[in-house]
Length: 391
Image 1 (cartoon, rainbow, N blue to C red):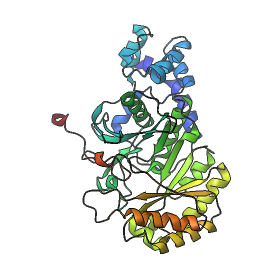
Image 2 (tube, one colour; image 1 turned 120 degrees about the vertical axis):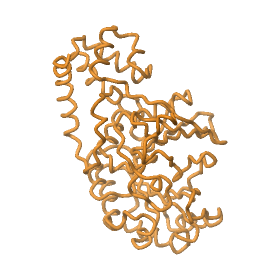
Image 3 (cartoon, rainbow, N blue to C red; image 1 turned 135 degrees about the horizontal axis):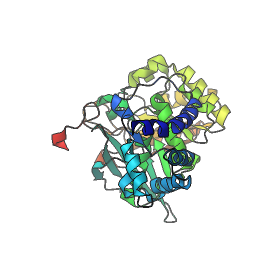
Image 4 (cartoon, rainbow, N blue to C red; image 1 turned 180 degrees about the horizontal axis):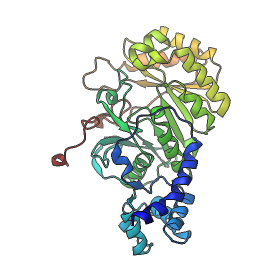
C-alpha cells in the first residue's frame, strides 16, 4: 500500500508544485509537522481532482464527482461520498486523504443577526469566523464571510484583540475555504462576499490566502470583485499581490495620517515607513486598476481630531485620487485603554474628509454584543491547543 500511495500521489504532487511555483510569496512561518500527515481534498481544483482520480485507477469523471461533492453537496467526510465506489473511498482514506472540514466548536448570535463561530481545527486550536447578513432595500440578502488567515496574529496592533491573544501558525488553504462553507451551512444561504479581515495578517500567509482565493472564486463561485484582502502593511507583499492582477479590493489598515502616530498604534509600522506603504498602494492601483480602500479605526482623543482628518486628506491627495476611506469607530476590547469616539466626532471627521474631496464611508458596527465586530476577534486557544478534557 505504501508503494501504491507513492505512485498515486506523484502526478498530483507535480501538478500542485507547478501551481505553487507560479505564486511568489514572502517568507512565512512553517506549519507544524502534523500538517504533512494528512492530505486534504478541500481547496483542490477540478483538474487536480480529476488527476487524483486517475492516480487511483479511476475514470477522470470520478474527479468531477469529487468536485461536486466538495463544493455543491458540501460533504464533510469521505464516507459520505455515496456517489463513489466504496473501494475508491477506502483507498482515499487509507492513503491519508480527508475532506478538510472541521467542526464548529461554538457559535454566538448577535442581536443584529451576525453570527461568530469558533471552528476547532485538527490540532485542537480554535479560529474565529463571522457571518454578517445584510438585507438591501429590495429584500435581497447579502451575506459576508469575514475569514481568518492565521491562528492568532503576530503583529499585535494596539487596538486589536486578536494580537493580544497570541499567535500559533498560518492556516492552510482548506482551513480558510472551510470557514466560508461553515457560514453557508449555518445561514442556509450562499455567501456573496468574502473579506480576509478575521484573525491574522493575510500578507504573512500569502500563499494560502491566494490558493484559498482561487478556490473561492473558481470552485465556490464567488466573484473576485466580491472579495477583499486586508493588510496592515508587510514590506514587499503588496507588490507581490499586485503582480497577480486580481480584481479583488485591497484594504490597507492605515489608522494614522503620519508615521510617528502610526508607530504608536501599529508597532509593525516601524519596519514599513508610511511613504513606502503609500507608494506600494499607488503601484497596486496602476497594476490592477482597482482602487485601494484605506481602513481607519477612530480612537477617541488619539487619531480622531480635525487636524488628523486634514493631514490624512493631504497625504491621500499626494497619492492621486484612486482610493476610498472606510472609517471604523473603535470597538471596545477587554484590557484596552482606548475609547470609542462619540458619533458627533465620527461624523465631523467624515465631513472634514468629504470637504476635501475624499470619498469616505463610516462602517456600520455589526456583531458588537457577540464580540464579533472589527478588532474584537480573540479566543483563549490561539496560542495553546484546546485540551481534550475541554472538547
